Image 1 (cartoon, rainbow, N blue to C red):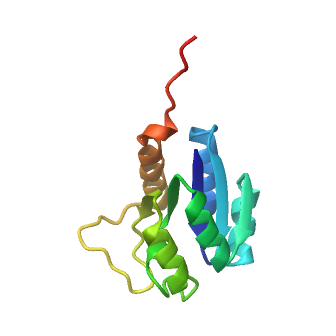
Image 2: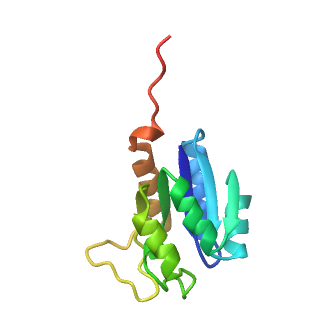
Image 3: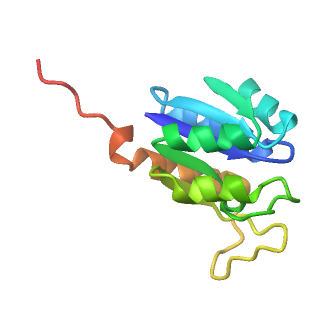
Amino acid sequence: MNILVIDAQGGGIGKQLVTSIKQHVPEAHVIAVGTNNTATAAMLKAGADEAATGENSVVVGCRKADIIVGPIGIIIADAMLGEVTPKMALAVAQSDAKRILIPFQHCDNIIVGISDFSTGTLIQSAIEEILNTPSANPKPSAV
């Protein structure tokens, strides 16, 4: 299973996601894409199997992913202080992958009806959703 983690700015959320995915879903192949070098480096340091930076890397990664995970801003053009380009947001939104979006209330994007959970709680919820994805729990092969 290919899990694409996308993050921007300092990569702190992506770093926590990569660490948690590698801990709870060790068989997953984690590809980290940052909108900038700092975000990419943080996720690579956290244990991503592969990493890349920039708009085209997001577009290509979205084609290969089974699951895409990141802050909700990855589907909003010009979000994250402008680091998410319209092309990036479109690639994520149009991907055939399952999208697991973490509802952070930043950059003038307010999601009503969402409680103000801690980052740790939101990351754990994302991991639980990954674990509930059928391809995350492959059936043992018959011998």
